[in-house]
Length: 142
Length: 152
Image (cartoon, one colour):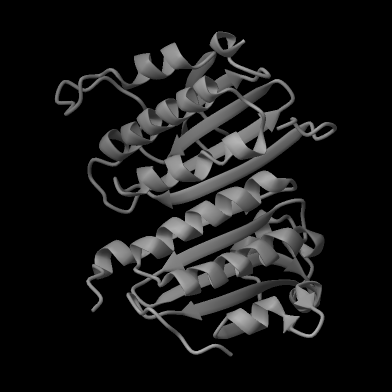
């Protein structure tokens, strides 16, 4: 499948209630990147993994005292890279002594993405921004 | 016999769509998964996806900005889609754009209910428009677990 020429930037954002069962919806929905953009299987697999980890972090950590929080995922496709942004309206990313997880999510995201940034957007929402370089095929497939 | 859990069926999602095929693909996957969880029969799910394809193919032509927002809600018997903000008259134009020869508007054929309403203030503000703007609301009913439905 050829990458669309001349379309420099394509975007879509999805907002869902921050519930565990919606992680599967996000993962399935954004697997569409594999159809819309030419990328190797490994890259798509890395995107799915990083996206799952980032969304899980939102579900587990962002809204400890409420059940009406939201999860937002945005995909930005450019000529040479895909950027996935996961946002929430929680209290920010902080170390937790009582964390129910192993604390491996962010290191895992960092290891499978080409770059990862943690911060806030213009509205104060917490962001995890993950970039994945695009190539015609994965190095192992050449 | 339907064994759909009402809590599992109840869900919502909002998509912000811009030009290009990616948004259409993501929308189709989101709606199909939400409807599958709601126990929507395959035939009706197919029709709902055709409706989503029609909406996403033409919505941006009538949007007040370069982005259109589509809110999807499912319950045990219903799918609702709310699209906005559209230009004044944009919803009617969208119905015409989605018409097929000999069939008419795909949206009107598939949806059980169709409503054109003024866009609410929040959506107009988000779209940075002070002019009249519209929203198009579509409702699709289904019976969880039903194997057949009457064809129109």
